[in-house]
Length: 224
Image (tube, rainbow, N blue to C red):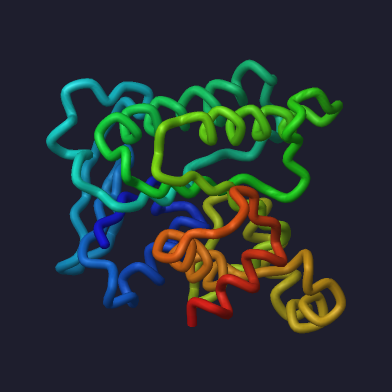
């Protein structure tokens, strides 16, 4: 399996990359981003692309892949709806539209979040914008497209969030994680489980395109 990974420097992307590197069925990984990721592995090729809104002329780089893990995103905190729409909807669709033309048999997996609003009409800004992104992705002519909606994600294996506030949160919550997992199993997962679940879906598919946190944990268990 040949895969493309967007957002490899983020917390979720780091977890997905780790599982891809460990999986013998993953033959090669193309990492696309604005800067290089400090990973040296025979499976990995990195493509630095400064404008993630424009993929014209890159057909040779982006064709011939079986799956895409799109883990690129930002927090909506402090952002206007217009600015958040540009990153969450426009940037994501720019990549997805190019990939759907070049790889119609591809499985495209997008990291969204618990509480995403599929109606696009709710009062919570980030939720309706994410809902629009999901809806537009599912219209594209991929072989399959899946929307992952994790809730609380605990980073493992030394993985850290790039957002300072989140790093503080995870450092506090880390010692409490076993209790959180026991008390709220439907709303807690890990970077490892998200990566395993995404690979499982890329290989085997899933009956539904929207995957909530408990679906992610179930699929991760199946993929071990």
